[in-house]
Image (tube, rainbow, N blue to C red):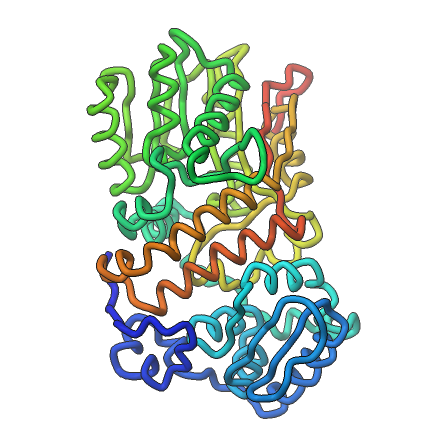
Length: 430
């Protein structure tokens, strides 16, 4: 997908230029300020200024001197900043960054402070009014068979060339497992292979294994499984990913052992000795978690093993955000929701599965995201040359930094799980 190109690469965009006509087509909610009452803007200013004084954060509003201690949040256009947040909450906070109305030299540092104190930003009595303030997710983002295809295409079909600019050479778009910290770009591909091999070992994949992979990515896991002698069926909804995965498998000379299908997981048939799914659960949507886990159970041959890698968040936070239209769901992952471990336990049990292993390593994802973010920033000119404008680059810079901050604040975690059939119950597969 090609988006309008803007040649201004200043970090402080402070858009009147970005609010010009060219920005309206691609970024209408960034190009114009939202409608909002003066009272909400004033209330937001008072609430946030009070909250900022209690955080380990320095805040500079306009040309005033910064106050506090810690990483510096520079609000370049305070009126627009508070108006957007007053009208649209965290969606407005993200759009304000995209518009260049606030900035930070240490973006991850600022976002880590905010993620660690997310429950302290709004006074407790006002949190009860959250339902009157936040927006519900659009019905169009539900992961029906048609909706899931559209949601996946919006992210994963952007451009294979774009992802190649910041991913490691294995083209793996999930957390690596590093042997030591700090991680470096020289160890990145090996760390991704280490992650994949751990998952394949967890699933018991070896010569002759019939393996189903739900979520192909760009084919690296299927490639390594086939190299072990497995027969692999891997499914994806991304035509761009499928095209490159097939090309890579042909180049490796193992395409005869791997079938890459453009197929919804709900339409897969047959049974398999092993099922592997890496950071796919987050894209399923809570309405369809029962179907997803039931599908895992139905596709599993007797004695088979399921290896999942998934991001998780605290259960109460998941419940609070589950129906909310967030900045991430609007701009990055439409239809997605990060599950809690509680939700995974409940849904897997209902499907007749039990969790036999649970390995947690969120600090590895923080390092993975740091490397992606640094590579993305280094490739700004090449991102621009692909047709992605300055607002897009700020959007993805915020997405990568926001995600890294979530793991550094321990607001998010990532797990490798082993699931097996629970022979003591038939489950409630649906």
